[in-house]
Amino acid sequence: MLPLVSMGLVLENLALLLWGPDYRSPQTALGLETLWMGPVMIDVSRLIAFGLAIVITFLIFIFLKKTNIGKCIRAASDNRTGAIVVGINVNRINNTAFALGAATTAAAGVLLLPLMPLSPHLGHDFTLTAFIVVILGGMGNLIGALVGGLILGIAESVSTLFLPATLKHAVSFSILIIIMLFRPQGLLGGKK
Image (tube, rainbow, N blue to C red):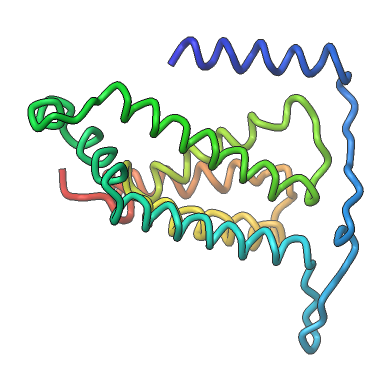
């Protein structure tokens, strides 16, 4: 874990050195397009990002449930020793899982690119949110992470109607504390 944090700090500071600390907003073809559905205005970029995020999540779920590599990833995650005993090369599977996670993170970055200005420090907020989502949904549960992300996103959006947007993380942590008090394994986590 420490080498990954160190590598993240090096990459962040390298980006600061190369491009500076200023925020940049890339221009996209659909950046200002809106879709009207009656009295509701929907941002096309956000709609596309939401749709593709659901598709990517569904494809990862199918990959983990139906393919041999996905089953090996799940087996190595559940019981490393048992996976080794049945002949799974756990180190190779760990590398494959890491690559899948990196590709998913890259896809998320591409989907978010037209939605917000970029900065070398942008990843910290997403890391914090990802931590809360994983704990909220239940460790190791893909559907739980999806449900936890939806709950957290809706709660943060609705909270901006009543609270300043700067208190977004306070709302996230409040939800996390409440869930941890009443259901420590997460919303869809198993009984452990």
